Amino acid sequence: MLERSGWILPFVVVAEMRFGARVANWGPRRTAVLERLVANTQVSPPLPEVIDAYVALRTWCANNGHGLGAKNHEADRWVAATALAGGLPLATDDGIFDNVKDLRLLQPE
Image 1: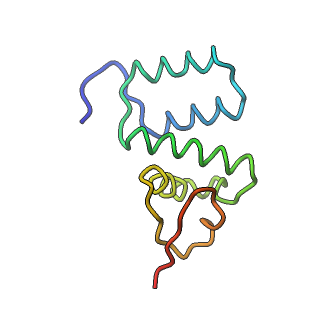
Image 2: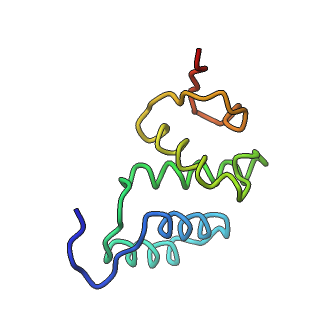
């Protein structure tokens, strides 16, 4: 539950900031400043594990040229990140999820 505080960051904003820092190869000092900013705010759900899974997934997609990294697959990335964070298989027949590192797929019958 969110409580009143000076700043509330939507989970997607935190993910975008971390992705940008990682892709830009920020060093430890700049990354620490970003993480202090995030630590001094409240992040609206989902859980931090889902955010971290999203950042790792999006970075992997960007570095490997996977189609899931395309702008029009934003929602798909969040679905995949949720499955990855929970260690759960993703039930889908959408080929965009094929060959994603560590993502287990269940084909619907």
